[in-house]
Image (tube, rainbow, N blue to C red):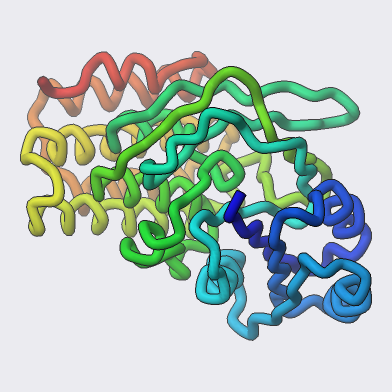
Length: 303
């Protein structure tokens, strides 16, 4: 298969060998070192001497999105797939639609020795993804030309960059194939992994990504990439997602983070009373720890 796997790496020397050895040499691999100080770059260069499929580059700009974009610029294959530097490759699906722009696959997480497939649902519309965050880094395989055409990764996003990219990709109305029969990728969750465990400590970065997604929807509306109805749903989904986030940081006991989210909501959205009431309900449910609030928000989408 004509595919390149791109792996950004920042101080991941202890994990890289396992990740790289899980990938067959039939696939091209680009490791982009993102300013490591633990010897990761030198180790990869030495390892590449024994692996003809491995190319090692370095990126001076901070952030995984910048490193991924550098890998995108180096990619010469039809398809591109992004890993984290501590993931495990476990195969690629059959039945691939060669005409697709985006192939989506479920992933699984290993935490404390236990493996669990991440909950997922096939996503066809931006508002559904905005609410349920199903399209993650390792769950999206892009046609390289499509990803380049929509601008690659947004390097302003220092967190939730895959959520933003998934929303922006769907706003461009790609041909999407969902392969749901099994998970093909294992994400290891550990103390030093990129997968975070709370919202409050990262709230400023999250709000910046929310702002960028708002801009993405506005651009789609301005350029008529989507119908006005779908854009309205995307804006409504983002409004509800913000209220759910506000409830989540309250549950974590951080009223200052909640204040920042409320400020963003009041600054960006003008909604009717019914939507305001639904937002407050979603916030209350998230604060109380009620699971699946996004499903209620999806049910409440404007028709």
